[in-house]
Structure formats: structure tokens, C-alpha cells
Length: 146
Image 1 (cartoon, rainbow, N blue to C red):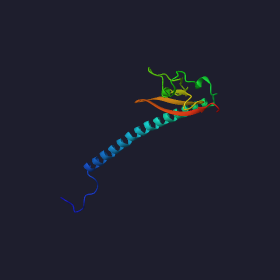
Image 2 (image 1 turned 30 degrees about the vertical axis):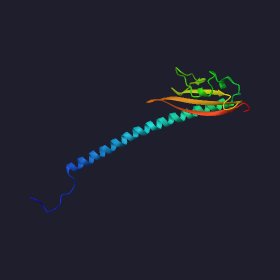
Image 3 (image 1 turned 90 degrees about the horizontal axis):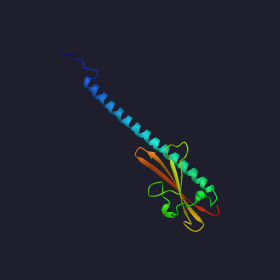
Image 4 (image 1 turned 120 degrees about the vertical axis):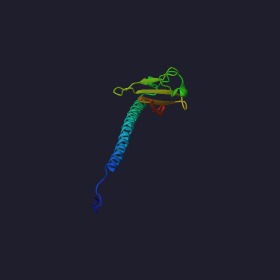
């Protein structure tokens, strides 16, 4: 026997549908959280590499113009500014900063470049990532009178 009153509440099918939509939403948020954490870790590594490269650059700027750390060891000049330690090319200088696992700093010198009495110095920071190595470089020109 039917009553004249309208049914109130939700059916089991409506509740299951709402719960499944809610679960899909939670899964989407969870996957975004993982992506955000990876992006934050990458940004932190890049910031550490930039700070290490900048610190090394300031150290090199404070050295005398003829200091051994400011010499083009292999004589490659401008062509060797991108050199890192590999089978086919060796950097002029190398440093592994303490406390920064896997990070390496390379610096290469091009003497008398871009003109006599000047040196171009390129500092390259390299650090490991899940998908290979990441790097950044800073370059400056050093004068004999500075």
C-alpha cells in the first residue's frame, strides 16, 4: 500500500555514486600532492646548486688574477668553457661541496677572452635527479685590474 507522502532520503545507488565520485576526487588530490612534493624537492636542489655556484664564483672573484685556480689548465680556451669531467673532455677545475650529496662544481677558464687582459670564467653545477643529471651555469668576466 502506497502512502500519499513523498519518499525522503537517498537511495543506495545514489549514495554509492556519490562515494565513488568522492574517492576519484581524493585520488586526484593525492596524485597532485606527489607531483607537488617532487617539484618542491627539485626546486630545493636547484636553489642549493645556485647558491653553491654563486659562492664559488665569489671565491674566484676574490682571488688574484694569476692564481692557479684561474688558469686554463688544458688550454682549450672558449671552446672548453662547457667542459665537465667526462671521457672526451675534462674541466679545468672540479669541486665536490661537502654536505651536498652528488653535487659537483666545475669551472673552466678562457684566458685572454674576450680581449687581452681578461678571463672568462664559467662555473657549472651538476646534481643528480631521478631522470638523469641536471645542471646550471654562471659566467663572468674577470679583469686583471680587479
